[in-house]
Amino acid sequence: MKLFECQHCHQPLYFENTLCERCGHRLGYMPDPGMLTALEPTETEGAWTALAFPGKRFKFCRNAELDACNWLLEDDDEATHCAACRHNHIIPDLSDAENLTRWRKLELAKHHLFYTLTNLKLPLKTRAEDPENGLVFDFLSDTVNPDGSVTPVLTGHSNGLITINVAEADDAEREKRRTEMGEPYRTLLGHFRHEIGHYVWDRLVLANPDTLERFRALFGDEREDYGEALQRHYASGPPGDWQSNYVSGYAAAHPWEDFAETWAHYLHIVDTLETARAFGLKIRPRVSEGADLQAEVDFNPHKARDIEDLIEPWLPLTYAVNSLNRSMGQPDLYPFILSKPVIEKLGFMNKMVRAL
Image (cartoon, rainbow, N blue to C red; front, side):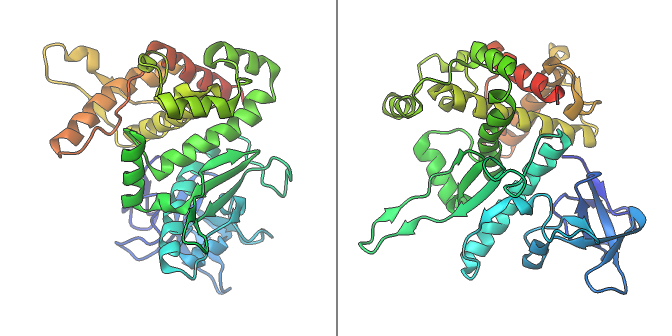
């Protein structure tokens, strides 16, 4: 994520800001060209001019009325929802205050996801554009049955439909599930990045025979029975040496999950490196062998030609931020090991994206 600033007073801004706290200007995000802009109202209700683009008029996504979106559309656009919100299919019952709070958190994570997806120029057709396989989201709650039992909503993907259990937006509930599943890392944004990996596999791997052949050589044959593979994983866990070949234990369950987990980490790396670049971070460890851990992110990670360009600064950066977290008594920010086979799989992701 890059840094933003108010065009009126130059106050530094976060991606999710809706108001400049220094000068009071309303803020809105333009996905193309990827800019957060200060706004001024016009004589027409609901229409705004952008200080970043004088002379052009914009309107907010309809979900801005619910404090769930700060994205803009051009004022003459017939659409009512922005490039991210138009992919929603089902949202929770917003008359429930708890659901509204959770949905806002879900939308923030989803918009962060779309920030990266649009920068990588990935195909993002809606269901209106592609009724069978277009990208669409259902945000659902567990169902309490008449007998008091609960039918849980399973987070997952199927033919472009991504389902997220709104309970994942509750920090305590998500941490409980992380502990029960023995996971080192579990976030809302991580869920979105993993599930979109399944969608990307359908769009960019399955649809291309040459890419599919290279995928099978690296990740394995996805034609292995998926249900049986998951049953085996949950019954026995990952193989003891999984860290030698996989980015997570769950990635070892099946080639589809290996791809989705690795894709999520590819997005973690690209987005975090962009943030490091925006802050001008340089790593210069003051230890006798610190030269091996020196790094500077002085390039656009979204356009990296080779995976080595990403990994070379990533490893020193994660060592540094993990150390900072430990100084605050927090767990490692990035508690993962990137083995040589995992880096090769990440290279597959980068080549696939660069070919778009």
